[in-house]
Image 1: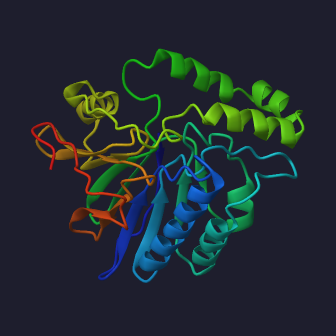
Image 2: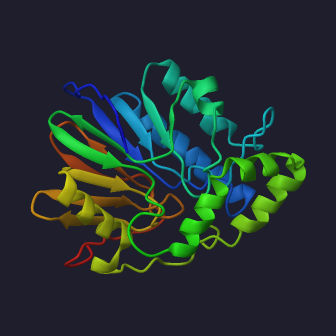
Length: 270
């Protein structure tokens, strides 16, 4: 786990967290509509953004060849460039769908890409954040696949494929993902939620006030012990949730959601 140095939030500013945009799925038309919404959201927060954290699966698939990146998403990328050039710190985390982000965003936009969880303290409040895939017990099949996909030799071999073939294969693979099946409702597993169990284990080792992750496609706000909370951001295919922290209070917000969705807790869904 990495430690970040984040300056304290001045009066009137906020840190924003969002996750799981899954740009590119399930088809071009709906992805473009979602991209426009994300750009509107970024425009809506730029006036008071102290920093923006995007917690993985920003793209439903991404692979950077040496001189080629996936087609599309230019409005989203342009907005990130605009905000970064305006001096707003942006942090991107890799997810299980876009773990092959490499140096394009750091080089072109000055935006760091994080490959593991990070910890930081701001205004006396301590955070741990990341995408959330592969955390906690279980999910052994995925953890094995993640090790394969993160292997440098496997990445080199995939890069030898022509982009038309490589991105075509990846596109066919991603159609089986839950993001592509937007009508599927995630099931809340209560105390058996793997990321929640991970947060409990980490809280025993070192206290954090907030554990913020994505990946699960289900908004959650769960107490971890007496003085910590695990928050999952859900996704932007339907929920369109994000979190804003002003240095004092942390709030779940929604931006043009596709319905009236509840936030899962251990005691009830509200």
